[in-house]
Image 1: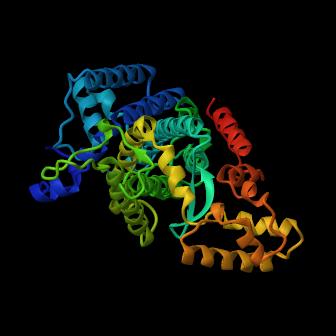
Image 2: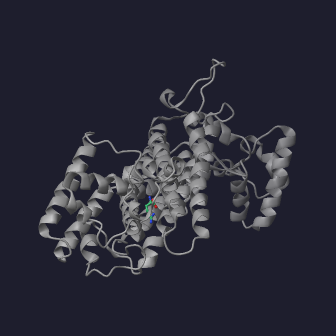
Image 3: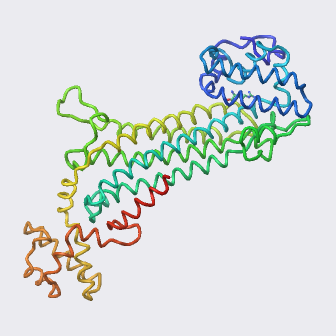
Length: 457
Ligand code: ARG
């Protein structure tokens, strides 16, 4: 294929090198952004008298035609082209001749590609936010259904204190709300137009950078032309935010996997989100959750790859930067596909509160409450803690639990124990009493659900 930059060269590019150099397989997905950016640029050139109104009219109509044809599947993007920018410009020139050759005045592919990526990512941020919100509402739905489902809360994966399943789920909702915040922050910061930075130094033409910026919905323009074409912080920032989304989904997945095992059986995933085994007829595997956990590494890889690609680069543009798109697109695609499967998986899962409750009955998870019982009667917490520790050891030795150890035996450890202790250590009461703001108390959980619903409106 003839190169637009062919003038200086006496030989054409080696076939392997040409293939190696091309980014069209990756950047073809930005055709819409590229065309919109070019239209805004042409309109500015005409407004400033740099090209004629009639050339601008031809360029705009030509570009709109190309956009329509690609959308309709009438124009196939040529995978032998160097990149999407070159493909569209040469297609335009093939369609309208000389006017097309004027489009690239006062512009470089360096500011063009920086513009396209920002526009593309901006839109993707919006769709990812919607997907995260969909997952948050699935979580809230399950939280509402399981407001009263008492289960053991864990630390060190050892049964610790009674909580509700809703409280555990809402922890994930909070992480995801922060993820939305981070993605919106990244989107806001990237929303400055680099167009007009040109190759690196700005331009001698009397351009107006603010006109296309405004037309394309940017909140302003980048302040330094070298930074404008060299900056890929916005890719890194978004990949950081996406990596955290994956961290959260991965932790959640790990719990889903545990909870659906026979050892826990707190939940059962819907058949439509599980798979069978090719040999073991009894198996029902949580493949979706495992894949999400597994794909987390990919997104971390995309982040590390981009950071490493950037770290040694002198200013301004270097071809290394072409690698940014493979990474950021992979990160976006991965996160979107994970969210798309995660939300309905959560929505359709069945919870098994009886099993949760049974697990909560073992493991002495009301021991803290028993210590607090003595504290309320004036015993210093450390002393109460030690006494209850001894009672737990005694129960373990004698195959008893705190709830059915006779009062006479309690009194041997401390005379302050009375029959009302049994009420104090009932699992439901242990949960109810944790009424501190954000705690697992039933009212607190209700308030959290209400707040989450308001957030989702
Ligand atoms: N395909 C290139 C990229 O994605 C476009 C910019 C090329 N600029 C250049 N001076 N070679 O980075």
